[in-house]
Length: 184
Image (cartoon, rainbow, N blue to C red; front, side, top):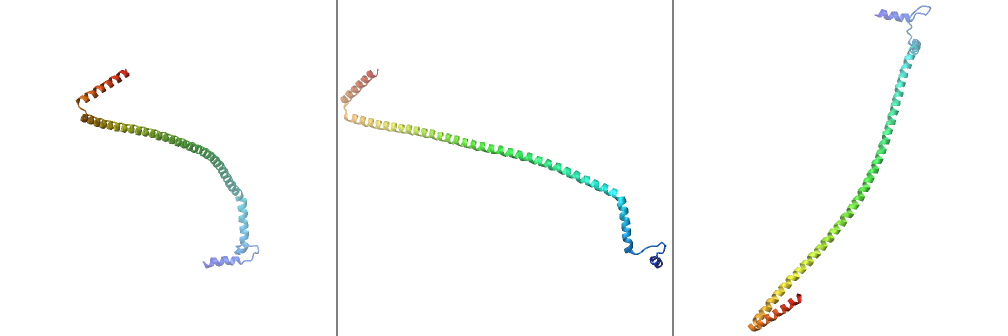
């Protein structure tokens, strides 16, 4: 193996007097090789690279167009949603105001109905009190009258004799007869 390596190394030291050989000087050969490779790549790869870049550009542009369309659609949806929101807010305010006025109206009606009911209850209470008062007065009168009558009868029975008793009954019958003639 040493012989093969030595032969390549010895080829690099040959003078370049019209002979063919390998140049092992890396610093001298790299720029030339690179320029050749770059030239071939540019010449043959230019069309392929342009096609790739054009395709990529078209995809980017179509993506941008799609994004713009989606953005416009989203803006339209947002505007419609805002319009619906404003409409719903106005309806909610209207319902709220109608509800408040309905509540106030019901409150006034309830207060009036309660006031009327209380007034009727007060009148009914006063009528019941008056009726009970009259009934109590009548009961007291009847009791007083019965007691007075019993007392008068007791006094009469104890003070009157038969003849006086007979004359009192005749006088009372006469008074009742006179009263009966007046009423007819």
